[in-house]
Image (cartoon, rainbow, N blue to C red; front, side, top):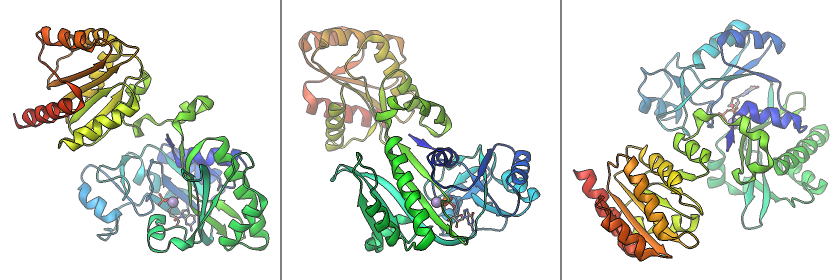
Length: 418
Ligand code: GDP
Ligand code: MN
């Protein structure tokens, strides 16, 4: 799960990682008040959306063509006067109010959001700093070393993907042992790579140690501080922060539920999560209901192999009771891009005849507007298949995975042509 910048900074501050003071607001009047509360001077007003590139992004209303907005946010077209950026520097309460008004209620389009953009419902009002150096700091999980790896670069403030592509030697990697945390020699090495010396190096080492400890303790799967700045006074702090938590560790962090912004999440994925189903939305038109993640992967591979594209997959896990199947079908069919549904279930402990009955009961409660292909394998699969065939419903049964994939690809093509 992702969190907003203001949430990430609150968590970092609690963990002893230096961040600029800030107040999150949802109205322009509150922005003016926050300006004063933060002591005035240089203040930054920042749109809160789950995407980067806000500084170059544009906040637009419904009247602006989104393709044009994306071209401006990607630097392909020049920005017309008066088109608000997602990050604005202000020097008075009145300007803070104006900046907030130019963002709140608008849609922010950045090179990361795509043309649809993301709704701005909150802005972060934060103390501005004079920047002496803009650095990059990140942490990701390295699957080769099976460790978190800290990435540091002097090339901060810019698109790090470009740095990684053109000048990979400018990014230093330091794997961390989770049991030991970041060791002092590693912190020194990273500070050196970041060009920090004297007092800034001391501050940098504390920053790095607390940042890495925070990432380990919070089960962050990805953390990115771009830019990490050194101020004109030699302070080291996180000017921005993007944070992803590993959902598989959410059971350890009951407090994360309060951090979810439902408007930023896929509605079908949220709904599935509430019923204990795992759902992943994709770009094609064939919906897949499967039991087990491995089966989901091979189902999608075969659909693609036979010329189709999966619209999503929904994993009902070990069980396939009627209520679960019913909710699963509703979620799958909630997307209007779906042209066919494939049910691919392996009945090991679950018997296929029981699954077939659940499918039929669910089928009857739903207006099934697209073809349904079912492949059942495992215990009592012949009984299950016979039940479906004799049911008189318009269900296409399949023998084996290849047959199922071919039938569903053909059915989806026929349905979309009709
Ligand atoms: P992003 O574009 O979504 O990654 O948003 P950032 O939080 O990184 O802000 C974008 C840019 O705004 C930064 O790279 C800085 O150049 C600028 N910026 C943000 N805060 C400050 C600040 O306190 N002082 C100055 N001078 N620039 C700032
Ligand atoms: Mn940034």
